[in-house]
Amino acid sequence: MGMLIASILLLIASFLFFFSNSQNAVNRILAAAAFITSIGTFGSYMETNLIPDLIVRGTFAMDKIIFLEYLCSFILSLGHFVPYSIMLLFSIYFAGLMKDKKRSFHIKITLIILIPTILSFILFPIGRQFKPDFKFLSFWCGLYLLFTIIILLRAYLNSYTTREKWDIVLVFATIIPAVASQYLMVMITQALGDKNTWKYSYWIVSIAFIIHISLIIKYGVFGLRIRFEKNRMDTALKTINSSSLIYNHAVKNEVSKMSLCTQNIISVSEKIQDIDIKFRITQNSQIIEDSVNHLLNLVERISANTRQIELIESIFSLNDLIGDTLKGIQNTFTHKNIVFNKMIHSDFEIKGDITHLRECLNNVVKNSIEAIQSNGVITISLRYEGRLLALSVEDNGPGIPEKIIPYLFNPFYSTKRTGINFGLGLFYCYNVMRKHNGSIEVKSKVGSSTIVSLIFPTKRIVKNKMVIQRQISVS
Image (spheres, rainbow, N blue to C red):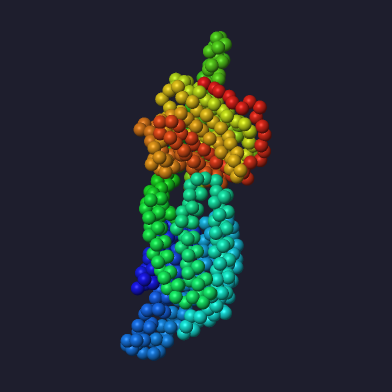
């Protein structure tokens, strides 16, 4: 009965993996592994309980018993020969090693990984009894399990963000212990001649299932917890896509008016005799003109592709990007008396989309300014740590409660209670950073500070140079 319960639990787990996000290859592969293991476990139930019971009762004809024995042998073969290949394939996809690869490459890798599985079916054909060489199975299944662990560890070490590392830790907590224990109790024990220990392996399945469900409820694993959030995001994206053309057209018209008015102001200022007033008008008009040109450029780009952000890459200095962003912002919030600090030890020239990244930094800095009531400090820094480059914006505002942080990147979610905030800024930043193969992170302490970091992979870095002046304060 224990084997039957374990089979049902594995079947439930396979459905959970699949329906949490059926579009994700990782979920589909893991669902397949759980499903085949469920079938194999049911095969063990048939072998140890169902078929012997039917033979004892004598209610089934012999030809039907023989059919069930062949079916049981086939199911057990699936359960022993296939799961470890699928787990290795799962680790490869989960680690992102198949990203941006051609379909033919995916098929080729899958076939290569399945070679030991196919070889096992050839060496140990289906018969009335399942009698493979467990020493052979232990060898290649053990190698595959080892490769799976190595790939996941490599993915952990190469992860850019805390969230990515935590996802891998959850995989180790829910999947690897169960697979490793099953390997020891089923493969190794039978390879050593122990024919009884494997019968208690259903306890491993049951415990792993309970742990898995607990982690789903508390943290979310393989997209199961964020399923409904994903659906809400899909709906929001459809709304954004359907209205973007109208929005872009309206913004372009209004921005064009602003640009025309700015030109008129500059023309009129030529007639003003007071040099100081004339300078102030010219300076502020130039800031408006720069912002208008940037916004027009952004609107044109969004209009060209409303469904997906497309990058137009160039090489530029992050230090210059920070300077240009502060130049356009600092004079518009003088009433708050905010000090801007640049803590730049090294400048980095990166390859990316300067228009989208400037808008990202602009959004983050404005969020910090709006969070500060008055007499605040905003520090912008660049730090390089091994495999990532982080452009961070730190403010000494009121902070953000930890329970709110996971929702900050959802479209239309905003902590600001004003009519001009639509909750799209960080959602936009998230998509831009993912397009750059990077990420965005938020760390905050309520009543103390908030740090928002734009994180770039090192492959984006073109040049690194020292900056002589390490701190610049602008108020």
